[in-house]
Picture 1 (cartoon, rainbow, N blue to C red):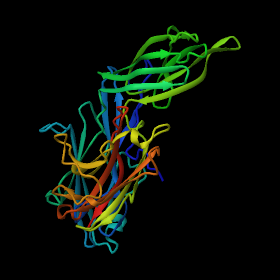
Picture 2 (picture 1 turned 90 degrees about the vertical axis):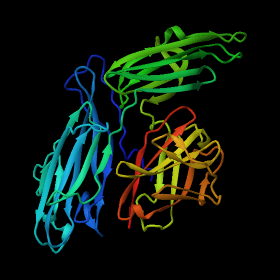
Picture 3 (picture 1 turned 30 degrees about the vertical axis):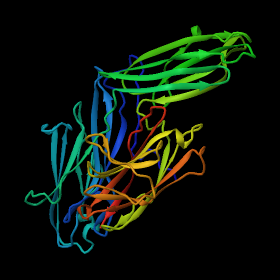
Picture 4 (picture 1 turned 180 degrees about the vertical axis):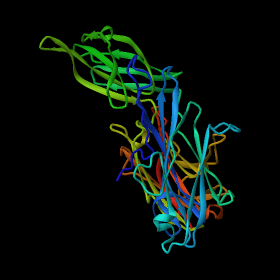
Length: 459
């Protein structure tokens, strides 16, 4: 099964003039959280073998205010567990802040779970405390109202004992930060004829305003037929609702068998609010029942956040249980959209996180078909090696073994490629749950955002 956008990425644009307090919020991303603090745990679902079986979540959304400024809101959903039989007290501290070093908390709350002896331990209802934005009729529940701020970008969870001593290292998750600009270059839509070439699609966001621009050359690329090339551009919200449409009548060009005419085309729209899509359609100008139409249309769609453009993925196994030092192999498959093939990828990335800390970030370069580790703080790549070589790429926390790693594709024109990644976790990761995220960049300039793909439980 293809896992698509488990870390939910979505974008919204408001119609021109529609900004205001009633603007609807949309989840931009969902962070996964699971903490094993010994006496106290945080996650969701059943509790087995000393661990919550599922993840707690932080949902992030952005809503433009009346001035077009994006307001971030974080919503926490999870369960605090008292993981013993004899009972006692555990606490969960939830801290909201910006991601800037030294920033003061925007809000902070502490939830307390106290219970007596329970034969079922953490499975007993009295040893669970639901942490929800609204409890309603849920028993054993503490309310954790969402927090909103223009500077909010981080939520930190700290498990405490009855004396407020930490049970584990605090775990932080950060929001997906919307980009201010996204550029797509070398855009070509070949309908043979007509053709749009040397094109560019640009998104630019500033103070809540989003401007989209499409530029390029439109031509009737045939010397054996006559026709009129025409294109139109739609500026859409995430659901495909058209906010503004540009029918480029001035760009209609007619060619004869002896002349190939070219028109430079350009259109843009300023959409108040936030992120949106652009649809570019190229076809032949015609009429139907006296009305102008675009015949034989061919289109390309562009999304501001990337991620939507670079394809879909599958990671197997998605949630392995491993011991410290145990070798295990991920099959990481990426499928690009039609009509591309996997050689249109620039890079595939897989990273492993302990909370918000990256413990290993693997980088596969399609051009050289080599693997390296990326230092996400500096942006620098390590020495790269091909799969099958007697080399290892490692951090203080984990190792990627080249000898047992590999690359699989059914052929050079296949839309899918599978990376086989042989890994092991070092003692520093013992007793932890780790999140795994993947992403892809392609040769079109699309930079996919990281998406949640699964988790690793290390014993």
